[in-house]
Amino acid sequence: MYLPTISELEPIARAAGEAIMAIYSQPFAVEYKQDESPLTAADKGAHEVIVRALARLTPSIPVLSEESDVATQQARLAWSRYWLVDPLDGTKEFVSRNGEFTVNIALIEQGAPVWGLVYAPVLDKLWYGGKGLGAWRVVDGRHEAIQTHPHEEGQAWRVVGSRNHLSGETLDYLARFGDMERGDIELVSMGSSLKFCIIAEGGAELYPRLAPTCEWDTGAAQAVLEGAGGSVTQLDGSPLRYNKPDILNPWFVARA
Picture 1 (tube, one colour):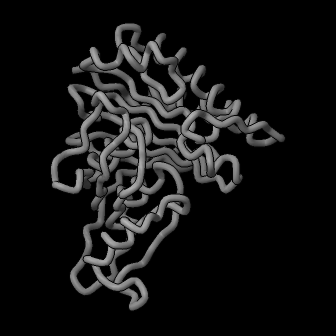
Picture 2 (spheres, one colour; picture 1 turned 30 degrees about the vertical axis):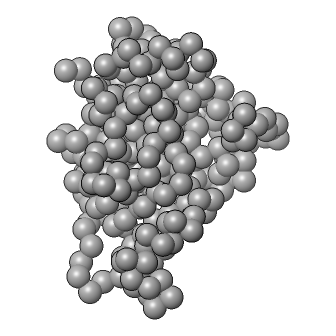
Picture 3 (cartoon, one colour; picture 1 turned 135 degrees about the horizontal axis):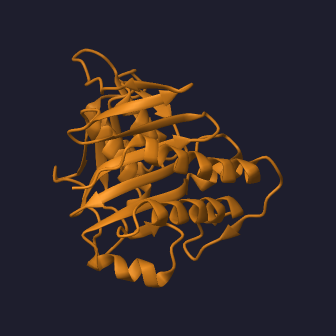
């Protein structure tokens, strides 16, 4: 089975980040898709950079990006192996200029993410890894191995969530872990796939997502978290799977 090396993928992610930052540093227009999610020139520019680079790197492996055309999104159902890309995960964070957005690149094999990379251009931090392979964080050029830190009895649960999607269902789910007002739960608000990366490097133990996401939102970060020793499952405990007929994910929980 082909697995990429970080030396192959890091330059692609960073080039996409440069395309994003070129737009981020100046005034930009915001369009809206049919589902009312925002779209900018940065999404499109990063998409082009990544798709072209992956086609050169692995001509035989197709690419599905959030910005792929309808024909590609339909053809994907016949693929057993492909790149899954979100060229700019967290466009709302991009638009609000809080820096909490990422470039996500994952390799999917038989419905599972086997390798993933998450790059945060503003933070200049990069995470990568895969289940059974380990996980690493790149800061200032240093590659540091990372590992999850499971919850310890008697300690508050450190729960990471989204500023934009902390739904009533999520709050009901969290009630089984304790009382937020009493301090049983410490909530860390964070955008995009950075939520998975915080758990992967030991900064939180739980991320329940009882609100809509798509497969490209989670694939790369799931691979990183699983490489660090964590898990991402549906509410019934079964693995979160990919290349389903519906690109929307079911509700899921990421854990240390």
